[in-house]
View 1 (tube, helix red, strand yellow):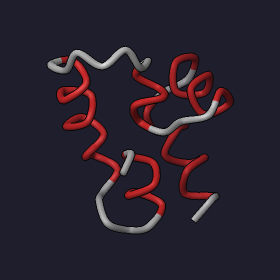
View 2 (tube, helix red, strand yellow):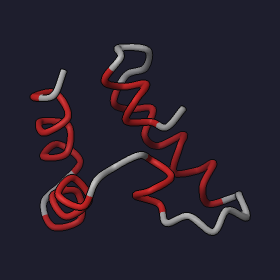
View 3 (cartoon, one colour):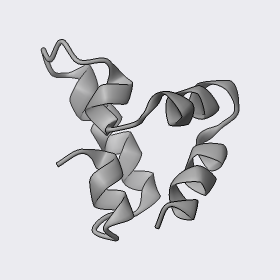
View 4 (cartoon, helix red, strand yellow):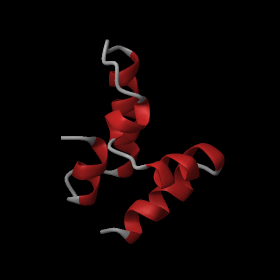
Length: 63
């Protein structure tokens, strides 16, 4: 299950995103980081262009 799914389900805290990024960095997956995290294009853009906090706000609005 991807980071986004677990976060929206309340199974993990937002800060766990760092663990998922670390896992992706050490994997051989052909997926992009955004796909690995389960983010859609809008969420990825906000995360890249704004901040972790902006991504958290978007995800929190979907809970």
